[in-house]
Length: 413
Image (cartoon, rainbow, N blue to C red):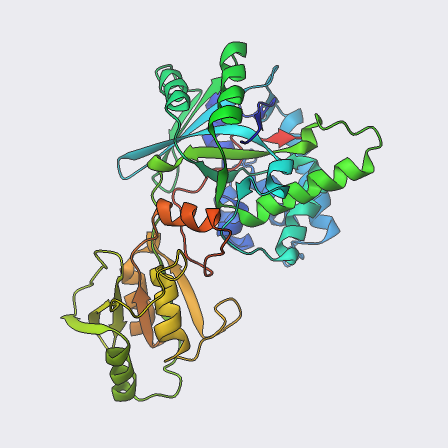
């Protein structure tokens, strides 16, 4: 079972919530962040991407940028752009995309749960990326952005959320990307206690959906602070990090596709011959073809789209083996195109399905890439099965949208 805790969040006043909130730090570069924050001194980007307030070209990992982030964070509190709730709360955060809304609970997740595997992951993390998030957390003593968790839906928790959202939301706006965001505050002591009890008795595990590096960094920070505190007793704020926790039946994973720079020295005829030997190939024409079911993929090559179907018996019937990303990697990217390490190869790139399959076609038609592959999305059941088995998905397998906004709630240590 898992432990969650309420906390006294730092939040913007209702009238400026939209201006304060921003996309996560890792979905943009410094130039894009500067444009997004232009004319918005309240934007939380001044904390998460503080290099926009430093001299152009300043290393975003320099001490100067971290110091600027601390100064900006302090200013946001001094100016009243972030105000602390008076008592520990949970929050319900709703996101709406294409007419579909998902409701998550903002809570403090336990570092200990992550360390002992009750919070489960499905991706590998890189120590250098973890360290970057840890340095900023050390400076700010705060979680600047929530991580995205899932859990197997519990009717009693759903009931509390459904009752909460009948009231007027604290925030309600459509962001610049067209996605809707709402937030409700749960401060009633009885409801707060009931949420904690339900997670402790009804939720066996939580699953990292998006934010593996931030989760690992937060857990390491908690352990680091506990070790340095001679009076540590386990109740300190650093033992918990901010997460938005969604029931699995509300979440939808978007496809994550691949584009490849060359044919590994093969002629067009040789490449197509090997493709036809590896799986069933059907030419679909010049109109974009989107995969319709599991074990069906599509390929864009030389101005045409092709339907690719994996043959029964050609892949392992294991949680990892049945993934289309695994089938494509083993049968095509490795054996035909010679791409053995997806994490390190410079010959392949990955395109989130939110950009549409037209982006794959554009990158091939431009001459930048030779061939593109579109995949049917992984399901939440597959993600949970893999995490439960202790396995790790291939890189760039899942894409979740909308992204959680930063700055709507901040948890401090």
